[in-house]
Image: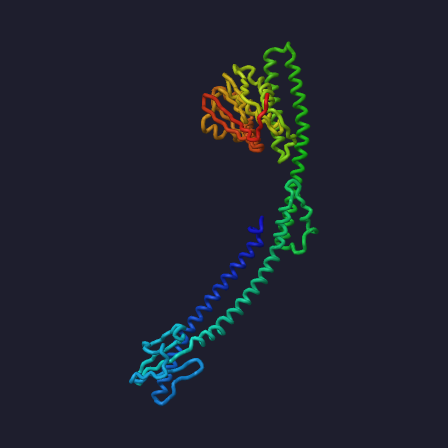
Length: 439
């Protein structure tokens, strides 16, 4: 969270916009009031004053014309005599007139009667003075009060959200691998953390504490599983190697031993893959620079027992050699799953592994997949049943390619698969960080 998008800035912007809107509405209102005073109230006042003058004139024709601080009166007789009449006021039509300041800035009411034409003149300066004292001064006071109230309201709002901002900054500084939950203990919280903020802080403390327990449990599991599961698998694998070395075993027993060896290899790879994926960030395996060609050769030898009873040829086509900086065991698990899947779904022909610059390509002449099957192939526990030998292939776990996809996403090794039903499958694994090497 940055200052530009933070809660404090949003509240400040909201108050600024609110004050601007109120100020604009107030100014428009006062301006409208001044217009009303100028064009309606004064016009009505001049009209009433003219009617009052004519009433008095009917009783006393010698009555003096209005002459006050704000208003002057002029009379034009039947003979058209306009003595002392300012030039801008001459030749005005009957009615109300507002003259520009260049012509004196008068507000004039022309009222013709049989006895003559009465002109009542109201000075524009007096109107402006009235507008100032009864408009601008109250406006200034109102705006000052609004700004003061807005400032205090903002301070109260800022104080109300300060605990939330403090909590957000605290969580922002946390180390994701080791969050400091002690700062959220009730006795360590600032005094202004109360109400909903206190509930939020307490809930975060309980949640992170619970999460740390789960993380510790996961670490204990992966550590114990790494030791306790590998030991019996190693024992089974060694026993199978001893049995395989006995030349006196019947052929059907030797086939059973090879199947056990294949199952042990699958189990060992699955356990290793699960342990790698169970750890977040740290796989528990050291990164090192290694030649990918050597890993490919080792994995090819491991899957040979899977095709012992099939007319399949394993082919290694090394057109390039390159290095990777990663845990070699991760690549072994990924490549081993792809090779076992290719051998499992190929009845005859070949499984070819090409080592190209920055890429591995695994091609088989197996049963292939339809477009619908290809879309689901990376889903957990999905097994394509295409082909005549589906019963034997159904012995697979249906999780190998799911592990491949997760490992490829974890380490940034994109995997692409192309397949044609009845023709075979091609899998491409790209290594963007690969570096070339001489062999």
